[in-house]
Structure formats: structure tokens, C-alpha cells
Amino acid sequence: MKTKLNDDSNLLFIWACKSLKYFLLTLLGFAIALVISRALGASTIVQILLYQSVWEWLLRIAALIFCFFAIAIIYESSR
Image (cartoon, rainbow, N blue to C red; front, side):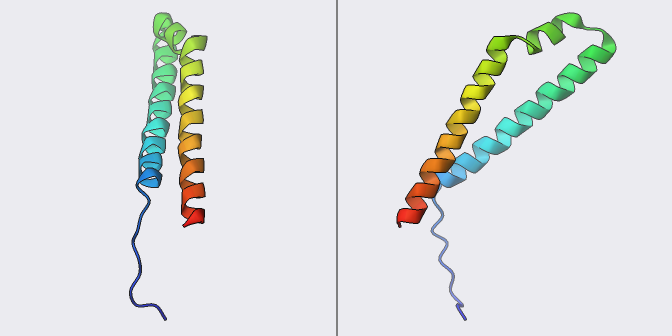
């Protein structure tokens, strides 16, 4: 049985996990803002949150985070 474990964490994988965490928190914040603004009748905030450009940027960020994970996985498997 191994008693000494190697903790050679990949720095890129750690960054990808943190960026995924904050990205998901941002999406949760958008969802909460959307629900509350619809319930209170603030139509301008709803329109801003439903702009296509906002969702395009969120999709780009999600693709970038996916690329971070892919690069980190490839790097770890090659070690």
C-alpha cells in the first residue's frame, strides 16, 4: 500500500476548475437576476439579460474553459 502520495497538481487544471466554478456562479447570478427582475416587473433588466451578445460571450467563455480542461487532461495523460 502506498503511504506517500504524490500531489503534483497541474496548475492549468486548478485554473480550469476555478474558472468553471466562477463561470457557474455567474450563470447562477444571471438566473437569479432574471427571475427576480421578471417577478418585480423590471423589463429593462430582463431585456439586457436576454441580449444575444451576452449569451454569445457566455458561450465563448464556456468554450475557453472546455479548452482549458482538454489541454490539462492531455498534459496529465502524457506525463
